[in-house]
Length: 153
Image (tube, rainbow, N blue to C red; front, side, top):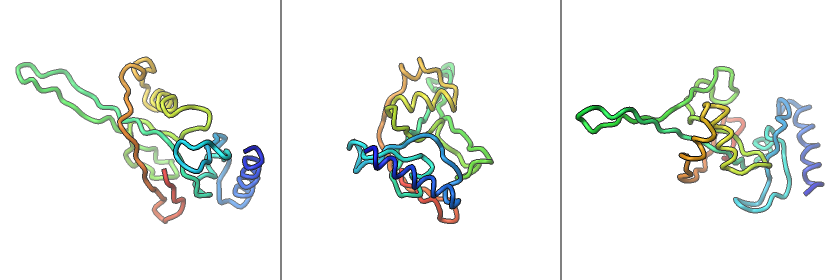
């Protein structure tokens, strides 16, 4: 584990030096043989996609409901979306879930969802703890419009 992590750190240095990766992110992602399998190494988040490592992340979708309309029994509903910043390197100005983020090696999926919801959307952690529920898993592939940085999540 330690020797593989050290080797991947050297690879990250080389990727940064070559310009293939702009900089170290500092957050470590697990490298494993499959979902739920033990990690065989850790890799810097920015190198993971270049190396073809499957990334795990969370997407938090917040649903909102309005006040019940008098006499109608109808409660307006909607999904709370966030628009990505124009300065993002991937998909600037696209619409995103309420909050999302890659899964660091040192916390659980639920802890990460709670952290991202608080950081990105100001969701009170106590409200998150009481109301949030996992509803499924999704696997997707993304890339920049020029076809580079193919990423499986």
